[in-house]
Length: 139
Image 1: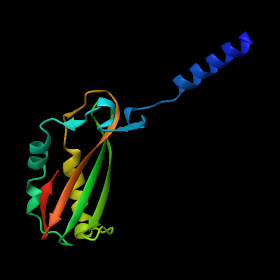
Image 2: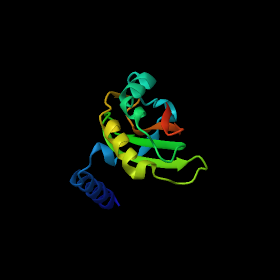
Image 3: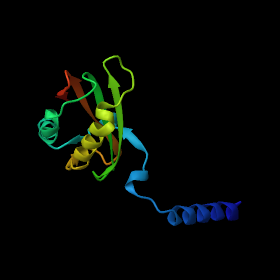
């Protein structure tokens, strides 16, 4: 029995050390979970400033919402971005034939200084409200 236990521990140790991993491979928790409190330094003013220029863009369809889900590693680096686009009737759409999301993702990649109260991989949501062909609100 003792040999099996020692062998199991040895195999587990070898397997653990032989696999390469990075911070983006960690499991993810919501930004609000258990005191994680993930946010960008400066919060809303920082986001509004980063996306200021794109707010002048004319957008088709004229009304809807875009959500960027930024997956942030436990040390504050951007892992990847997921995007969701819906029109005013909550149907999937592409604003400016997909070009707008590409521009938004480039801006989001430039955001730094992600802060959290606990070291977990988490996500942050950036939501954009589009009304009358313009970005009306960023939250």
